[in-house]
Image (cartoon, rainbow, N blue to C red):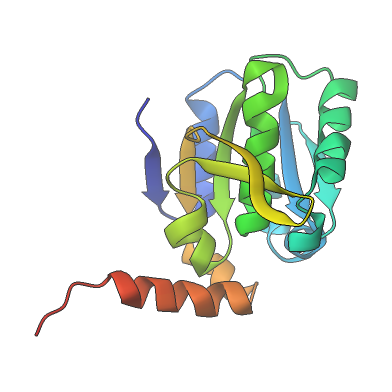
Length: 178
């Protein structure tokens, strides 16, 4: 499977992605910040779906939060033909992708990264995981998302450490011109 990374207005890229596949059900995973600031930008581009809201931040990237997500997936009767849409920074991408990758031995998911760091690092490469007993990304898998949909519009809505670290990470990887 090839991972597609699409940089375009989110309503356009999301509508196009959804129209190309037949998914039985769709859930969206967001934290309290992305629910407020980013989810409204995609809501009208989505088919009927269930929103799963989790608490924001690394302290919540744990098995207990995954259990909450899996409980919703189970109660919504997601099958192997369902889609998970992760909208948020690295925590949402890591944990939402991990939950999708192990639910029913793996269902499709896409990443909609909302911070620069998650756009240049966390959402690509298929690195998925959760923290366990104080160890960062201690439990995880490698599974590529069906697509990564990038739109810089999210920079206007979410600010903070993820964008600052993302700029530094981008700078570190630029070729040396001297």
